[in-house]
Image (cartoon, rainbow, N blue to C red; front, side, top):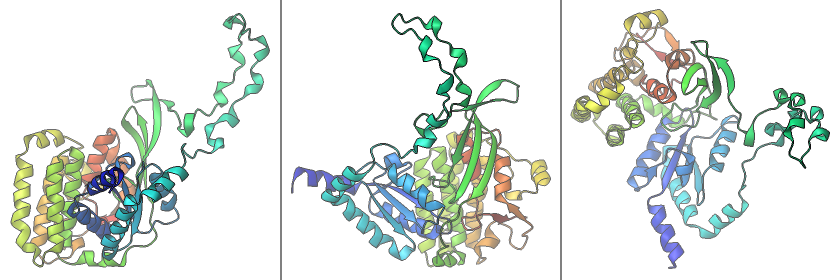
Length: 394
């Protein structure tokens, strides 16, 4: 065994995996995460940090080019796999691992991949630059006399300022009437710790969201195995998954990992009710953490008046910390009964009311927040991964 082979095998043992979830494939994503941890691999939070790209579910026509763009951002050595059902997880990850160990295949991939980003020439904006009004004849380069340069004839207004295909900020007045740059940024749909398929187009002044528009991009098909999600116990697992997301975004990775492990235990248990003491233990651990409470207190508070005005669910009342603790309570309560997941979503069985369109709600939730806080606020809403467009509320 040569030195290169030895180093490659050592690196693959601790590979970093970027997991991309298609809408309707929550169960598959959970199985992938469980196997990744069992194999000693690590979840990646960005393409630049990843060795493996695992796509959970078949991308549809809208998702496929986005997945391809993410794949192009992975540095080599790299491998990818698509998993459409939990039963396919271990074989698919095994093939991806073999691809990482295939030195010849990695050399060919490095040779064939594009060195520069694939940016169409039309997007670079050169086509809109008006050179016709620039009088180069008056420019005396020999004497470097810039006084003869007639900048007044240079029409910068028609220039599409996109260096490298990346658009620059526009200008607009903020709430105080001051001129500030406005940058348009899309969050999602392929973002770790983010609802699968959700796209939030944001207009930012600085890092503050001044306007937003939400939409869903669907994958190919919803996995047939997702019908299993309605068996008892899965409601608690969904809540724990959302709790782990909030904790991860807040920076408490150890507690997030505990919540994910507990989620997996609930899904695999014959009697999920027996795991209620473990959830209560996690709840006490989260409640005792002063730094977490200090970090999440007064973050996007929603009072009773706003709930009534906007007809939002009562479970959203309070700040991010309140909603985090409420989700843990619902996770425990859902294991105490045999009610199915949708009934357990709002923690008040038999009191379901009219539906709320999440795409209308989210722009109102994130308005005025910075990007990091907006992500925390969305995660704290404890959205249903299969509901996608609607949730039930009291």
